[in-house]
Amino acid sequence: MDTAMVIDLGRHALWTAVLVCAPLLAVALGVGLIIGIIQAATSVNESTLSFIPKLIGVALALLVFGSWQLVTLIDFTRSIFQRIPTLFS
Image (cartoon, rainbow, N blue to C red; front, top):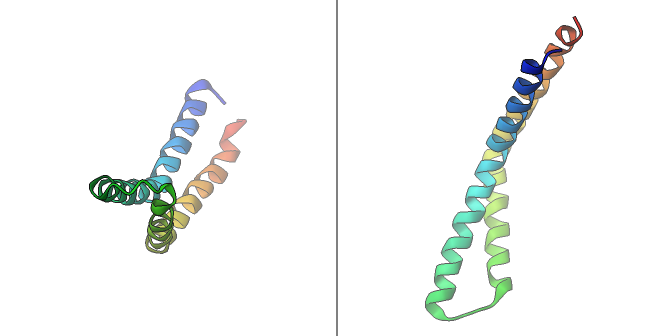
């Protein structure tokens, strides 16, 4: 196992993590931004007001993107297991 292979495995793991997390984080960011704009426009400074819409948005995003995320994680795990025989040769 050389340095290039380790770097490639790390790069692939980080990229998979970014792909899996991106939809949920984007939804949370979008909902938080919209709620923040509404709070700024109405001068309502309640910090718990944005929690429930974010929770609902992330839950809906998980329902929509959950199967794709699971398939992505399974493909990554399979690729790691397929590389095991070549690691120590």
